[in-house]
Image 1 (cartoon, helix red, strand yellow):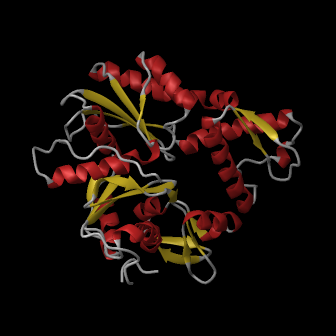
Image 2: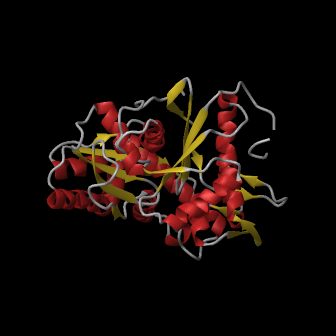
Image 3: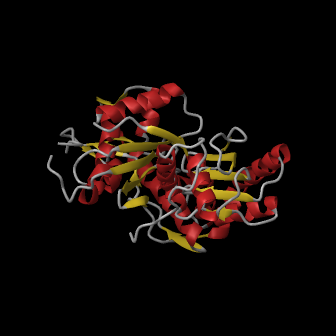
Length: 378
């Protein structure tokens, strides 16, 4: 395929193929700090003609036909090489390639039509070498360069160290809260190796959505909406299509309540709105959020106090999370700029540092920079 725009002489890409969303950032010779691309859902949907759809179109189609969609392709790849979509076995590698194609389409107007010179992939802390190898094989078969690997906590800590000029060796904790769970890791500024193994806490977006749904059911019952009229997203008796819509509604409600004090929810089949307050969400999620505070206290008890705790990931802006961590630490945690995309921008900085050599530390690569906002290659 011909180039879609003026090609840069050198450009690179950092990608985080997350549980619920794909985050990516690119860098060029003239913009080595990097710029974020708009995130999009990880869902891939196959239509009746065999075409694969990504982004919001995939979400729309998945609501109408959930049996045609795979919501977590990378996790599916680690389980088996095939996904069953509407009764058809589809290579999971094709689903991941479709996600990558959307990323590359967004890069084309600036970076041209060729592949990036370097590719950095943000990988979960607990991924084995074989898991990385499986994803690397998919990436290289799509015409991309062999990936350089970085964990989310390493990327976030490196970027924070550069931006805030944290003294080398000073401990800082990174709380990476995404849709699939929350990971707490203690690192030392300017060092590659973590000071402690990451601690996983069941406080990701999916966990908070489940807690919020239980509260919504209680509110619906109090408003006179019967159990039969208000069935949760995980209930086996509910048609799959309605479960998918309910699940998306609850996620949207949680995100709204993280930014506003109340929101209206219209449940399927109901003519009137259900008012849900942030306090309802905080009460429902209190148990899961307190587990995070307890993990932070345990980390400090085991390794000594640390002055900095950086929140990153899509769940990081949850207000009650910051409040409970402040109680545990005696001071407010820090929110990484553009928390959901902090890891991919940090990964770009590490890419430049590593190419410059050195002792394996993070150095002084470019700091955070945020934007104003077919086949893979011909």
